Length: 329
Ligand code: TXA
Ligand code: MG
Image (cartoon, rainbow, N blue to C red; front, top):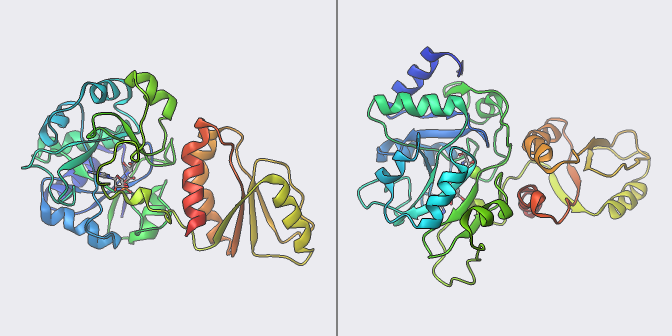
């Protein structure tokens, strides 16, 4: 059931459902989440079951504000505090040392916890309403079946989980790809997943360079967003440079069908049956429509999606990352 997220009565029903241990589809500025009370292990377990997600893949806990950090984390390093001040509320998740008594199921038993304060007004209203009912954080992965394309509209969420799930409609997501994740448990910031906040913005706010996991040798936490194959539509995705793409189109011949092309460069297809969709020229516009575009191609029934490789610049890192994973599936 989709309810209008602008309606305070709908937000209250959603908060009450969460307080009863049920799941709710939650709009955020990045993608829609499948939310449960982070303080309830049985409620969190329902997320893993509904998604078909392996139980050792930790979830992000969403909090209403900076105050929420101390409920779940301790020993927040100075660079992480700067990141919080600069980017919260917004599309940035921080991995922090976890309070042993809080969020164990959401963290999949790890001694760290991923925290994020979303900027979407409906998410904020829901988190506030939850607090009033004694629910102090919402565990929420993207609201898609494991390995599939993340949802950016309420209808996408309903398509994944059916009408039995209460989904708050907050419109189409502004950012369109998942939050940037920075691991703050290793003494220096480590980028685990590129996203709406860029590498350059993080380094500027931290006042220090991002490091890689390889540089700071220690056991890797499991991050499903960092699995190679992920965000996969039904059709097979292939990344190509514009010229190779044009050559491939020419070779296909005029009878070709069931192929979609998603490119920034102006390409010509000799086959009228090939679906040509222009990719936006700006990285943030491309991010905003990326997952909906992949879903549209599936709905159109294509078997192949040929995508022009995005530029190798920091602004495009999040989009490039998602497309590379979609292509690896
Ligand atoms: O934008 C987003 O982050 C969205 C919206 C709903 O907030 N959520 C999202 O959740 O993308 P999910 O579960 O699809 O991705 C969460 C990522 C996973 O890759 C997970 O492994 C990682 O965060 N993660 C969560 N807690 C972690 C931890 N303690 N250590 C390492 N990685 C963690
Ligand atoms: Mg996900």
